[in-house]
Image 1 (tube, helix red, strand yellow):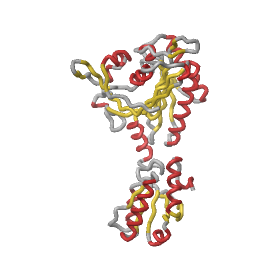
Image 2 (spheres, helix red, strand yellow):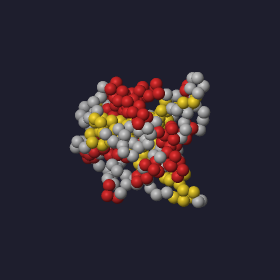
Image 3 (tube, helix red, strand yellow):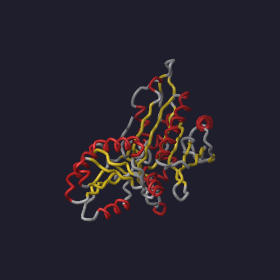
Image 4 (cartoon, helix red, strand yellow):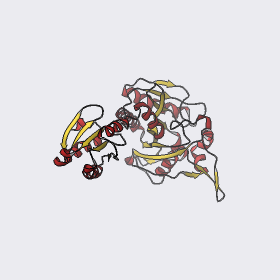
Length: 353
């Protein structure tokens, strides 16, 4: 379930969560509103905790999984800022899972499986996995930290992944698994993370009604797959040199009319393609077909279609893949079906024929 939470909150919230005590160096200064201190949010998690706390919960309700594309704000010194890779305001694909102790390993396993699927789809198959343990500045007992770390180790073991241990590299509220992807020139960037948190449920007094009618504390998992969307797409753009696969390309298909006589047909075809969710456009014109093809190749448009008398007469499109190969001439409706299926399945159009 998707949530949308405020961009700021009372300073008291960040004191309760522990961020003000343990993360103050990474937060912007507070602002005063009608005599009260407010803090622009560096993280989304306290809001999700409050959402959990808003209702009485039963063990039957768990696990609860909440996600948010939430913009957060963190103070970075000007000398450390670096394009999309390090910014002061960015969007996280943030999610939090509240579960029972016996559900923890399966939930972590599910997140690891989802992370592998998504990173692979974007072409990232080389990455390093790191298990980070308790830092010097931390909250929570040794027992809680040991329990959380063991759960993460168990999930990694079940996955069969090799991993290194970053002693003292965990968040102040719990141990974590970090997955770093490798870009085109071999640099590692930390994107995905799974963090086990016994601390926030304790600080906020979260509970659920157990089968025997008692009150128990749920376990909380933080997870992000892309991490910072800005950083992830910065890495992706550099790794692909802007040459995206069909399903991800900003423009998926460009129609190239032989002359302006065929532009009305192209405009009508593009309207139908867009209605099917395909990012299509017509070359603006004023240049030869050869020049149109050259520009489309320079723009790295994955599918091209030269439109002339034959295509208009047959109500068809002849689809050519920029990286080589032809899909052939297809009736317009069939072309739309193939391209829409390829986009939906995140595959190349030739795989959808």
